[in-house]
Image (cartoon, rainbow, N blue to C red):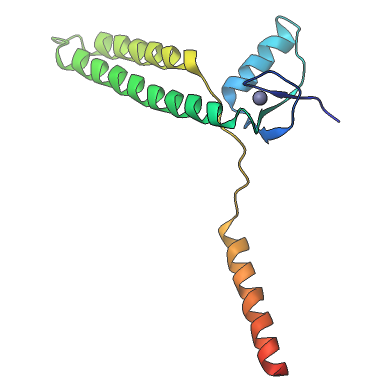
Length: 140
Ligand SMILES: [Zn+2]
């Protein structure tokens, strides 16, 4: 079995699996191809660390949105006050947005793979329950 690693306490514990996004894939790629230090751990958040994780994740999500909003606002202002140099203003605006985005990634906290119950499964469950009830009713 794969080794697991809690992303908060760093211990080998079982927990809720972390969703692999492009940031994690980028880190993995760098570790595999550049620093050659890929461990291949399955990343999780253990039960004990979950409250801490949740706080950090919420703060990260908030920060990312705020920073991006500020970046977009700045970019829009640059375009408005570009004085004819619209293309240059758009380029600078894009650089600001990317910079704000990267700044937000300093407090990066990945999402978790939470077990989601698909809508169809719920419907199916309800239908099978209804069948059981009608079967019971017939027997009675
Ligand atoms: Zn932990």
